[in-house]
Image 1: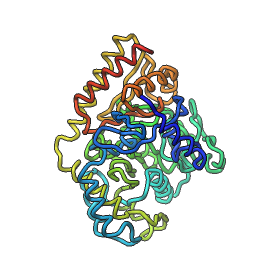
Image 2: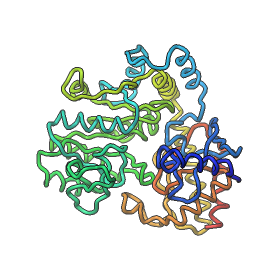
Image 3: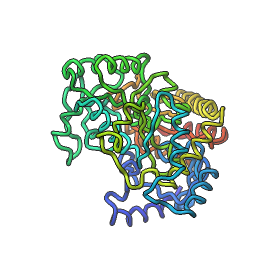
Image 4: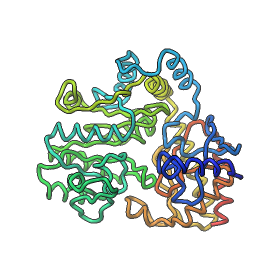
Length: 428
């Protein structure tokens, strides 16, 4: 495939946009080359500025669970835009989507909509600190909760106690209140609580990690986190920006039968528009302004376009009784096909999958945390990425990102992808 137009556009973009992209995950620094510029998308396919068609396994990093340009969502946005794009005032639609979301997700009474997953996680942490009157939080190495200062802390090892800023502009004062733990290591978490008694406000975690590849929780880990938070008076925050409304109607809480204290949403809840949300039991959410002392605000929060898109998306996911089983079956079919062709090519690999999230790690050993994820062969991944790209399959340009499966994928698309992987594997 030729990408002449994308290359030209990247040169132009780099003159006026830092690095030529508005989000670093769109850059190709991890794999080499220049980013693909998309012209349009429909269903399971991307169409770039050079006229190439690509089967899409990013799906806007998760929200296109029903496919690109899903007609009911598009129509709802168009009709709402005709009546005004934003008012900075309440609308009935905000209440309607809030009621629907609360009805779908276990253990939440109230929800507040924001404009991004970053904003949702940032607000959840502030709420947890205000509610518990404690300052410190625990996050896990390799988990990404957006680019708020509290979350941009370097990955630690062993029983690290204090975080170290991982980005210029993040102060050590901010970093010291973020404690690092190893994903899937409950002993590490317990040690942090012991060393910081009565100081920890919350644990925040991706219940299924998606930013070091797809990494599921080991058996009993989430249950143990729930127990240790309860025993120590801390809140358990599930960052379900990726998993919410994707792994099940009620997200990871439903899938794993674990009750979190605060849940963060994004991606799917916006139907493809910039939306985030956080939700909890009434007594926690009532700590938010204007009812309580914890301030949070956003001029465009709950804007009618985003609410219209999200409401149509959630209605389908709520009413379609087979959507999640279809996604599971399609992703399992893809996993089995990938396993078969990579084994036939004698490629060392590990596949992790939960529901419609899946990733291929080029290492024969199990991948269960950030350190084991880093053991993957990145040079092989680069060849894998570009091999698939030239054959019309687009995956994330990073070895540390999960793939997202959309219901718009046909089994013909999946077979095409498996065959493309088989041909690529011969070149690895």
